[in-house]
Image (cartoon, rainbow, N blue to C red; front, side, top):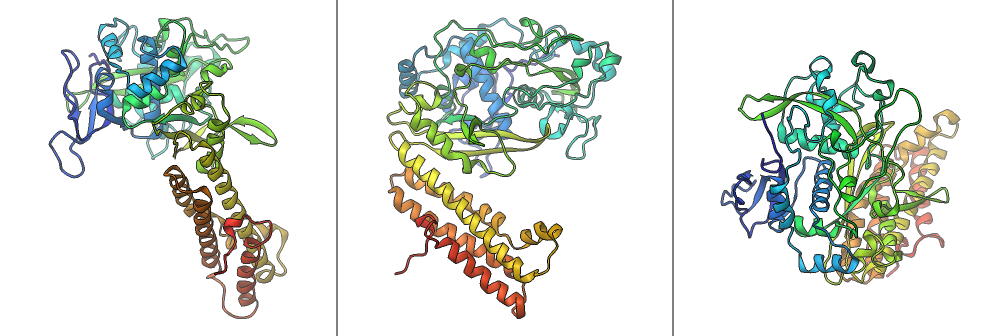
Length: 536
């Protein structure tokens, strides 16, 4: 059995309705098309699956990669960037990058390079399987588990699975889904104990320790254009060196030996192709013919892969820094803070960077293009995946300062409103629970704190604020509208929390004083002006 992503339909994409996606040259295969939700079968719109060669050859006829999760989409884009670098299809200077973006340099040379390339491309090769560590093949039948182990959202901590899937759930994965899940593991895998019986397999003890992969603990930011081609060009950082090699299989370059003792071994990427395709996991897959006759995967082993050394700035050009405890740190996914609440750091990165110095410096060079900034991360709890987090933010050349001001002040407005809601909750508790025990204080405050409800609605209002500024509305006017809406959200959230109180006695007094406390804090001299109630 053979499966080659260059020629198999393996990348789900959203097609552009004006241009039909035609089959490519010989050997590229036919795209597999899904009927759009509106029933249109004209072939001009909807979802399709394309091969890697087709994705690059027709990159400007494809709107976007349409993965099952934000992480899968990001992992596929990362891998395509690696292919472009390996093919020598990249700008060498910042000026050349700007020309590539504005003149929409074709990516067909990379598609031609792929067709000619004689490397290891077979997912099920017996000696050098694509993206895998062939040294594990001999252990697969005896120690392998079900294919759910390969999918981050199903694998949980790699020992206890999500979605009530058993570790040995026998349902096979189609080959294309397994390939994309493997790319996602290589990029976003979490540090945990592996479901590997290292001693019984004759492997050293370190082989049971999974390291956090390159993007597993931080937010990855991609600049999105109107087509897949635009997106790839925007994120194709200039490289003035020779093309380096892809990571096609474990044995194609020197890698960590997993010694029984000694220091943990890391390495620095040889170049951008190596970086974007690094094998963050040792994986091996067993092929099976599915009921529909298509190739699939019914058994997998997932172990530790390569660990990268501390990366220089040239390999971290999208990284966003935020201040935590007075120190700059890399932006990471957080359960307690939505990504939009950190968007000011994105706009600060664009406004403050030297033009051409990194992703944000390059974006500041644009004259007419209006990309979106897409932030993606995997939220995890002690190495166990919890949820994908992602958000999109507008960018317009020349309006960096306005967007930064709107995001900074908008975040401050929402944070201040949250403080006001906490104060109102405290006032309520003083009258409803006059003799409360300290141990009960947290639960009592939570009963009357409208913060969660306010935050739930604030995100949409914040994006409306940014979109208004991006469209050219004055920042002050947009902030004023935003403040009005946040005040309304905060008031409604508190009223909903107070509905459980009786309109009599102490509870009636608590109701009245809580609303007054909220209004007083929102109208305090220290409050943002946009939050204060205006009198006609």
